[in-house]
Structure formats: structure tokens, C-alpha cells
Image (cartoon, rainbow, N blue to C red):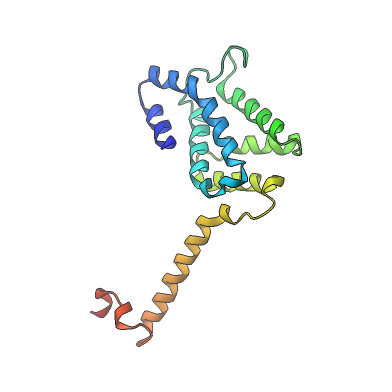
Length: 180
């Protein structure tokens, strides 16, 4: 729902869009990072990654034109990209004292570099989360989508193999089209 709201706001008239992003971009970003890095919310990884990807895309592409920061947060004339890079780096550094500055910088650069390719973005995000000590336990939920797809592919391959050999499938397991 939040992703749909962000997409709709990005596509609306410039005045409304700019007001919305100036008011809500940073609070939404903070909340998404908070939930994403909370080990109790691993199951929502895909939707959180998609939302973050779009948010960084909006900044990278220039879709958000007015500053997303207040005059107290950055000097006038600072680009949204520069501000966001610094802001996210500081946010993560303060939240995860165990991370080195270079790890955070590389992660932040990747957020902008991969925002137009969701699979790369998701992998980059997952790799970062796994590097956090809070996520050193069971990371299975982060791979749930890939596991489900592999299971579907394996079932389809087994069914195809069984269809090629007469008598391996029960008549009730065959589709109407298979019988013809």
C-alpha cells in the first residue's frame, strides 16, 4: 500500500508531489529501514525492498525535485542524492556501531546503483542484512521467494517427466488437455 502511495505521489502534479515528498520521504525511509533491520520482520523483505528501491529511484532519477530535507538538516543547494547518501550513512552508522564506515558507504552507493534493477537491489540489500549481527541467525525468510520458485520449478519438471512416460500419472492427475 505504501509503495502504491509513493508511486501515485510521484506521478501526480509537481506541486503536490513536492509537498508530499518534503513532508514524508524521510519519515517513511526511517520507518522502512527500522522494520527492515528488525529481525522480527524478515517475512516482509520483498515488499520492503521494493519500496526502498522505488524511493531511491525517485531521488536518483530526479523525480523528486524539491529538497527532501529541511534547512537545518543540510545547506541550501545540497542535492537530494547527496543529502540522502549522507543521511542513510549516518542513520546506519548510529544504529549499527559494529559496522565499518566503508561497509556502510559501499551499501549506500549500491542503493543508488541498483535501484533500477530490482533483483540486484534485493540481493544487495539482503547481503547487507546478512552482514548485520542481528541477522546472523536464521536467514531463511530472506530467501523465501527463491525457495518457493525453485519448488514450483521442480514440481513442474517432475510433472513434465511423468507426462512423457505413459502410466506414471493417474488419470485424476492429468489435465483435460493432457488426455487429448
